[in-house]
Length: 166
Image (cartoon, rainbow, N blue to C red):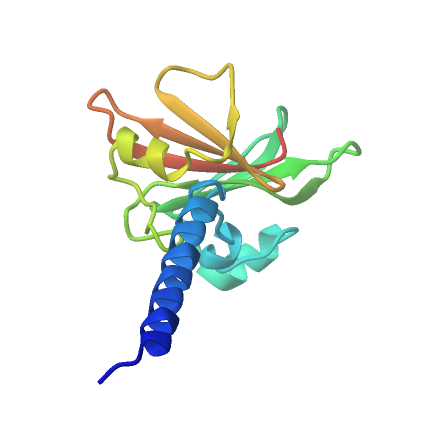
């Protein structure tokens, strides 16, 4: 036979568990989606041209540029690495990464090429948005990284661009 004190204690425990669950859901709804993107790719901030070649081998295509923002682009088919041009004209570290394949997935939501625009916008609904970008693009800020999601005419993600800063 259950005593009235025990019944009361059980009700209190149940109410506390419910309160914790509700509080957790409310808190999680407001947290921006974050992931250590470059770590997932297998590199770190400041990775150099030679380090990319050492890690990933010979790229499918190398595009050298004597002028413009990037000094060099290494294209591996499923991803591209862009290297900055320093003020003295020499090649700097990695500045931008493009993901072009669904084989690379990010975070517990497995963000990847091939997802719908609606899904991407829901996942990143609590992140700071980048404004004044093209209609085929949705952008968010995650720490130092500006992330641009580019969609095809069917609103399916075709490319993810990670840029260091604006």
